[in-house]
Amino acid sequence: MASIGIFDSGSGGLTVLREIRKILPDERYIYWSDNAHCPYGEKTPEYIIGRSRAITDLLLSKGADAVVVACNTATAAAIATLRAEYTIPFVGMEPAVKPAASGTRTGVVGVLATASTLSAPKYLNIKGQYADAVRIAEHVGKGFVELVESLELDGPHAEAVVRASLEPLLAQGADTIVLGCTHYPFLLPLMQRIAPDGVKFIDPAPAVARRLADVLKMHGIPTSCGTPGVELLSSGPDATLKKLFELI
Ligand code: DGL
Image (cartoon, rainbow, N blue to C red; front, side, top):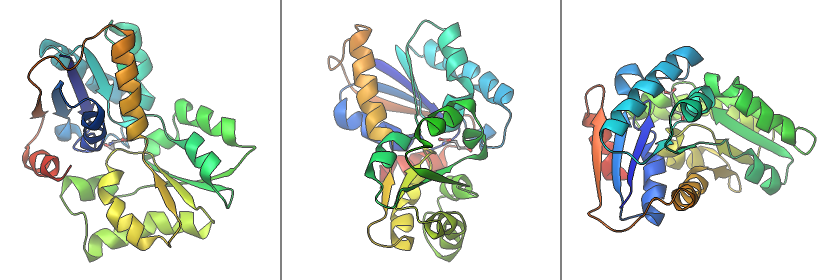
């Protein structure tokens, strides 16, 4: 059985854990919500690297064989450093610009992510690869992480917050919208209600889950041979984490 560490600035990474457990249901998962330090989206790369190191040390002390950085912001800021400093494999998030670029009919792809992800070299590089093929419209999902962490997934206030970031993308003609932050899939039902029919939202989590399965195989880490389970840990109060875990 593999022991997989997963971390995010908060509960967003649960949307990745959900997809991972669909294809690797029999592993042991140790999930760390760094909610005492959330949100990461407006922190410096140095700060996020420091948190990512501390969390990796903790997950290793709990027996993790591999770590999933279930946070686009931490992946963009810290995964290269983690890979250079530790010997275990790391799997991170990739903004799903590629499938979005091949699926759009209007030629406009929308990307919703944190400010930090949208300015990171990793994202700018991916975006550059598709610049000739499609137009990319971007918006920070302002306030989205806070909505999720306060369990406000619907209602008039949540709708107003989500509209303020989603409508500018729709107004630019985006018909395919990349969810570039792992908290955002919790707001997907609300986003689907706001967007006109035919607008597609792309969550990279299923692709990340498939990548994890491949990486475990490549590293000879055996799977499906023990008592599965999920251990939920957090740096702050854990009520939201537990509640959202029940929803996935
Ligand atoms: N869930 C995060 C991400 O995927 C981090 C959001 C935040 O803490 O700002 O980017």
